[in-house]
Amino acid sequence: MLKNITRSYSTARPRVGILMLNLGGPENSAAVHPFLLRLFSDRDLIPLPFLQGGKTNLLPKFIAKRRTPSIIEQYNKIGGGSPIKMWTEEQGNAMVNRVSELCPELDVKNYIGFRYAEPLTEDAMDQMEADGIEHCVAFTQYPQYSCSTTGSSFNGMYRHIIKRQKEGKPMNMTFSAIDRWATHPLLVKSFAELINKQLDTVDPKDRHKVVLLFSAHSLPMSVVNRGDPYPQEVAATVEHVMKELNYSNPYRLVWQSKVGPSAWLGAQTDDAIKGLIKNGNKNLMMVPIAFTSDHIETLYEMDIEYGEEMRNEFPDANILRCESLNMHSTFVDCLSELVADHLKSDGKTIPQMALRCPMCTNPTCGPMRGFFSSRQLPQNIVGCSKSEEEESMKSFG
Image (tube, rainbow, N blue to C red; front, side, top):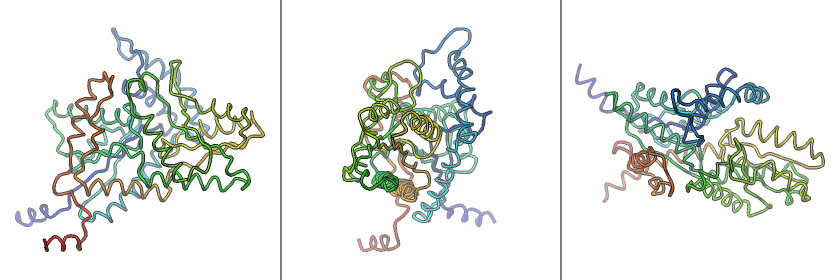
């Protein structure tokens, strides 16, 4: 009996978990305050001057409490909550179905790890362990790397791994990472297809006049001046998409979602729309170039603040918004190819992952980068999708 159990275990497929990392969003009104409190408490994301003393984190608590009513109102205008979990689940399920076809030797399952909303990244990691996952692929859903987004998620993972070790409960999973994919050909193709789909709705005589406004979440200039790679990686995505479109339209890269009075990366999306219209450009299209699904930045900021409200202010303007990636078939192929290619490789990140920002002061950043940049796939996973033909060719030497 023992021999049969041993034999069954030894031939079982390796269990791989794909942890899809993102910021997350509250699914209902009750989840808004906890979401904001986690967000404003994260020094990796927003470099607020924290108040110290008898109580810590007083400033994030104050800001979260103050902003909760207005944010609830915004979510009520887009259906009562964020759809980001729904989209991530659908994307992950479709991705894993495809990866399982490409890698039948592996038992692959997708998980969600949100930074500020449930399911939280740390809870997802514990669940993966409980499910018997042997290897975790930390797969950022931010195509362009920033220390404030992907870096924050990786820092959270690293801190949790160290915490478990200190508690005497080290994680048994091995790890590897997909840390950026700003210029992946299928990501570029996805954007180009969705842009062309929206351009097809424009009068043919005006199609070439439509100004494409590639809008991405902004960053505080204090983060940019530290040397964060995000602006250049977003710009790289834009340039590749325009090349795919054969530079068919005029375009600009603009930035949205500024918070607080400090200087942020600009030009701001709303200011750019107003300025372009005043300069005589009546046809504009916003393209959410740094988001992989719809959420409050697209459904409220773009569609309502920059769309409906701007149309009321400028009734002669034609202000469009390109669809988000969501479940676009080419984008699902992109996610699947990224994971399958990772599982076929040694799992190492590119050298960029190991490089800290020139003026980095985050004590977690260096060890985290050292950890993820030194990870690779275990030998029982590498080369998962080799075909029988490839294996037979190897026997001939």
